Length: 105
Image (tube, rainbow, N blue to C red; front, side, top):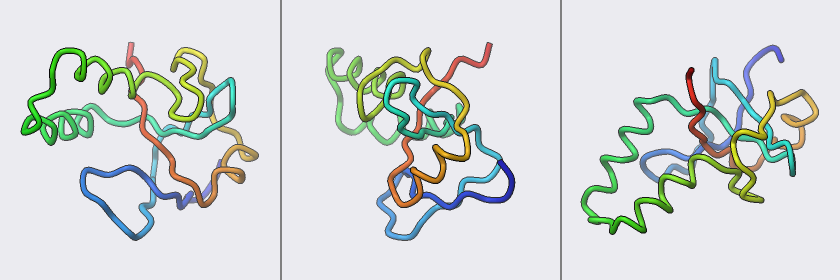
């Protein structure tokens, strides 16, 4: 995978222009092929902070946290993801690429 991949990405604020993901680990769901990017710890913390004002219940917090551990499209767990290949990136062109948290161990 060479060069830059221009894909729309989820951001802290609503954006209308595309975001260019550079030096990101792009992953594809092993079940449906949907492309995700591995979000950084700092991005996750920023997203968490943006939700504080909503005072989520424990059940809502669980749902929020689980959204970053599964495929947005088919809800397959992150453990079944694989490195995105060129064919995945071609198919992903023009659709929302969503973040996931992967264990850094």
